[in-house]
Length: 108
Image (cartoon, helix red, strand yellow):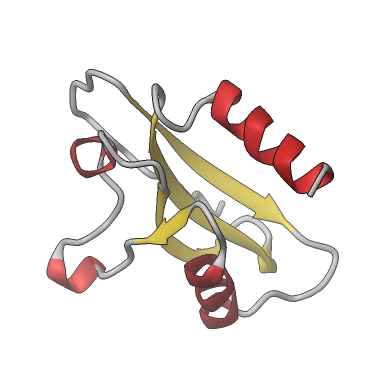
């Protein structure tokens, strides 16, 4: 049975973290997904596992951008899925700021 997991065992003060599994209708290329994430507004790609650089609440705290990393092919959905890990400052990049940013885009 394939199992895909991300474990995080740290106390945090003000950053949320999530392990996310995405399923797509079509095959997805991990490197293309990383490229798109790196170019996305409000996102900071932090994905250099070999150098111990990945999203962490400590480094996301005080930042407006959401850190995204540990981007990899999903063992569950295989070529049609991605697993990733995100961290974001819940005070700076919470629902209120996102609502303002969406409104600005809608009325620009």
